[in-house]
Image (tube, rainbow, N blue to C red; front, side, top):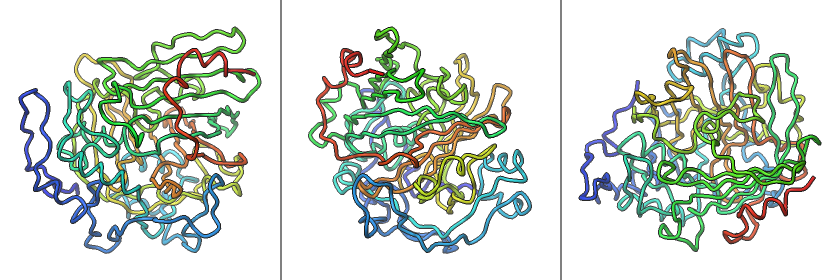
Length: 455
C-alpha cells in the first residue's frame, strides 16, 4: 500500500510565487532535514516491521585495504541471502515488487531470481552536499512548467518534493562527484546469450557540483560529457561530446560526434527523447540512459507516494573483477547469483505521455531510492499501455566519494527477450576515477574532439 505524503510536506501546498514559479517549502518543513529526515529528505527512522533499519549516516569510510582507483571491495562480505524470490514463491512477495520485476519472473520463470539480503542503509554523501541540499529546500523553485529550476546548487534541489517533476529533478541532478574518468563497456545481449562488447573511455564534468561554482555560473549547463570509443576496431577512434542543458526546451541538448574514418566533427541534433542509441542495438532510448535523463516536458509527472520495494542495493559482486563477463551475462538477464536485493523505501513517480506529445513510451514509472534519489527500477509501457521494458540499476555506495550510484544499468526488453548493459568494468584494470583535476569549460569544446579522437 502506498504511503501517504503527510510526512514530507504534501500539506505544504503548491503556492505560486509572483513569477509563476512553484514556491519553496516552509521553514517548518525544511527544519525536518537533518532531524526526523535525512539531509536528502528520507525518513531517518526504520519501518514498523524492523525490516528496514534507521539511517545512521551510511558508509562513512572505505573498507580496510581499499585503495583509490581499484575495484570496490564489498563492505559486507559476510552477508548471506535471507531468502531468494523465485517464480515458485513469487506470490509471497508480490506486494513488495514492481510490475516490471514481476514481469521478469514471468518472462524467465526457470532462471530469474532475486536473492534478498539484510537491508543496509549504506547511502551517504559529503557534508557539503548535505549542507547545500538543506539550503536548497528553502530556495529552489521550478521554472517553465517544470522544465528547469532556479536557486539551487550543489545538492538535491527538492529534498522535500511537492510534485512528481520535483522528485524527477532530484534523480536527474543527484550527486555523482564533480569530475569523473572511467573506461567501461556496454553490450547488447541477444536471446541466445551472444554479445559483443563496445568499450569506451568516458569523461564528465558536473558543473552543478563544482565546489567553486554557483547557480549563476551554470548558464543552463548541468554537465559536459565526452566518450571515446576504444573497441571494436571498426568503431575505434569515434567520439561523442554532449553539453547537457537543464531547460532543454529553452536550450536543447547540444551534441557532436567525431567520425575517425572521415576525421570530421558533426552536430548530432537528435540525441534526445526516444532517439534509439546505436550501441544499445535499439534496446535503449536517449532518455533511458541513467534510468531517465533530459527534458521532462513530454510527460505529466505524478508523485504517487512511497512504497517498500525489494531493489538492487549494495551490489559489489556484479562489478567485481572476480566475476567475468561470460559468467555475468546470461540469456535473458544477469546471473542472479551475483546480485543483491534489499527492502528499501522508494518514491513512486509516474509519468504519462501528454496528449499530442510523441514518444515510444506511453507511460513510465520510476522507483527512486529514498536515501539517494537514484532510480533503482523503471517500468516503461508501450503505446497500447502494455508493459514493454524494465530498466534496473544495480546500486552500490562509491565510498571513495561517497555517493550511491549504479554499478551497472541494465535495460530489459520483455517483448524481444534481449537486454542491454552499461558500465561494465569487471575486466578493466581500474574502475572509475574521481580524483582527476577539474578542467575548465574549454576542455569540452567541439574543436577538441578532432584533436583527441584517434584510432
